[in-house]
Length: 237
Ligand code: ADP
Ligand code: MG
Image 1 (cartoon, protein in one colour):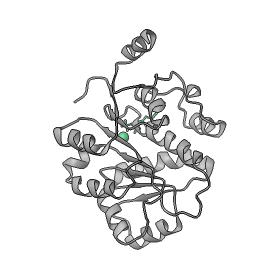
Image 2 (image 1 turned 45 degrees about the vertical axis):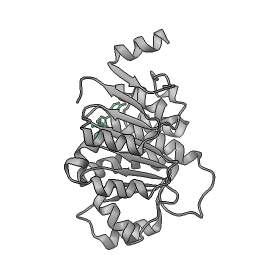
Image 3 (image 1 turned 120 degrees about the vertical axis):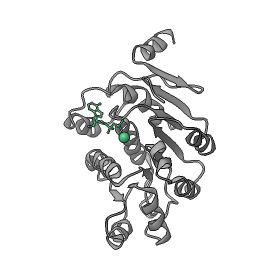
Image 4 (image 1 turned 90 degrees about the horizontal axis):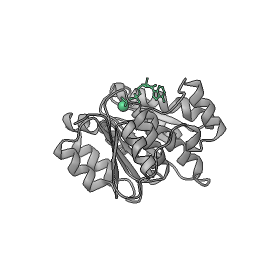
């Protein structure tokens, strides 16, 4: 434990919560399957970034996480890689419909970036990812969602539209990510986020990432996460 706390200190990682898994030093430490290790290597990722070192083992363990780290720190892979592992761990559920992983992001650009990152890792397993955001034809998105996917990356407003159109159901969703939560709040998406959260089973895993933690985001986190572990990297918010 002494060693673990010194390792965290050397990386400027702070954690709070009970039973926090120890940070990893390498992707090998995460126990990823060879296909995923190859996909990671193909991205040129040699070792986990600081937030990944601590967030990956926690997210893989199934716990809820509040992750606070600045832009560019590699938060995307810290939720996308475990999401793929969790999807692969599911027993055959082909007859059920709708995404297993739901990722919300504030803007179409961010949603698209996350979608691209998810696709790179998901491809190795034939896991389907869809992006859902404004500016694209609703009919095309409706058709794409109807065709089925395991991961959906969406802006909150457009996801609500698609849910209203019954383009997808969230009965199969077990993993929810709220990325850049502070920016989603700045853009006025709190009601849509609450609606989406309310449509996903309460025993889901919920991850909330944010560069800062204003009081309103803190309140949402308290309400929608279960026994979260908070991981903070560096000097933030
Ligand atoms: P954040 O969401 O924290 O702003 P991103 O997930 O977008 O950060 O990652 C920032 C950049 O770092 C991206 O270009 C991504 O491909 C790259 N990256 C992520 N993880 C690693 C890693 N382990 N090694 C090298 N580059 C990485
Ligand atoms: Mg990000």
